[in-house]
Image 1: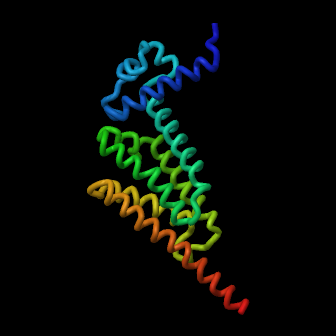
Image 2 (image 1 turned 90 degrees about the vertical axis):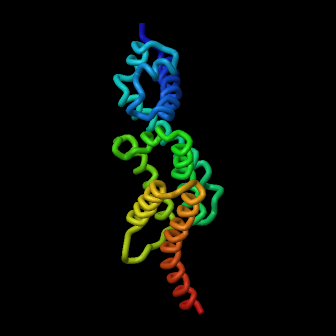
Image 3 (image 1 turned 120 degrees about the horizontal axis):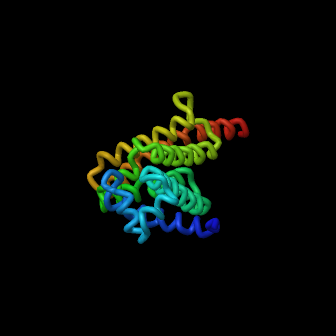
Length: 202
């Protein structure tokens, strides 16, 4: 007898909810399928019906968390006005919250380790969102770099801050500084063009 699709989806979601908590506490390396099955409250046999191995569970957890985070960020963006405020909101929601999570649960760092392909895809989504915001500003950033390069510089810089910052306050302060610099790099060429247009009109 075939399992109804909604029942399959419900079981999969239940597994991912439980597995996220296990990976959060123990990281990837220390987590076993037994741990996940125990957290779900099911047998390993039933767990293997939904996922072939721990790698599949981990990737699904990362992809699901990423999709939820991006959706929440996109929902909050329309109420934010300036480019700088929008960039800051995205960076704080995406990076600062993860920083605090790893501080609270050190083994959770595996969920943000770029050596995992699923995590790398997650960071590409973050970079794409930054690029989208910068591109929507409809400005040139000068001849030294492209908008895509500027979005990469912002994400790479913040990742470096995460490794070096002493605490959450310093990390957030460094994010604010970097976002201000990037937003300024976009504003300056736009302001020069606006000034030239204004001069022509006078």
